[in-house]
Image (cartoon, rainbow, N blue to C red):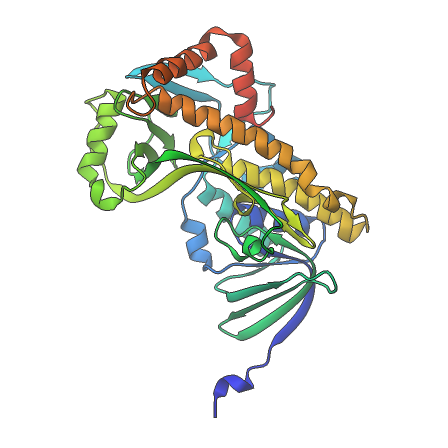
Length: 398
């Protein structure tokens, strides 16, 4: 006798099923929970993995204000104010100070810290429902019936009927792939190179660094009091065997033109191809996409996590209006409301990526592009108008 035949399928009903427990999914669920809208978050990884995964490190000023409006900033955000960047060319640095209104500063708050705080707030404080280590997730989103999510875990199969589904499960999740072919238009741009992201046991001394050199791009950003992450431009096909620890430090010294930098422990290495992607529309029937499930930006502009938070702020308000106030107008207009901002920050991220990389290695796109990019960087320090516009983009207020 097959013992699995005796396992009963669990069936339940909720307002919103959120797929994915990254920053986007957890922030959305926290906003909904705070608004007394019932929701369930399901995640294929375990809680420990989600809490230690290292990703982005800056919450821009616009999203600091978002968390303030939801009454959550004091409990969720930590880290120093993010107001300066040391832009370097061949070792010569100039510190750019992000200008703006008082009280509208961004923060260096790592994704790891923000996720940890969101999990604590949503689960431990609010009693939210987050289910880890699920598999076999399938979406039913037909026009003639209410949406359903089916999945399995250690206790057996489950079915959750719901009013709406929020796809916050990143680029390779099931949300977007559940949408029939031909519904979405996908716009892509590949930059032709990648970043090696190395988490190291060495604190940032001074200002965050973004540096162009004749040998390629390098950046250093804080990831806690004793650690930082270096980003080094590399070839698309590179992997760990191409970048032993000794080469990482040799290239850091060479690209920063600083022989005094000492080797330190390298905790992990990731290789990130730089590309931009936009999928539109960001909704289909009762399924709504947010964050990396809907768009990707190169990390140069620090807009990936921030774009995700812009999405879920708008989506949370729309879902609250639909489920609490029975007004679906904002949900119907979700894509139209958020997509212009997505394209705006795609443009900023492309500008940052092209400028910082073209200003470096002249073999990338030639000396003409190198000198043109360096002129654009100079403009940030000679033109108040250029400086203010750049600041507004950095703050998320443009």
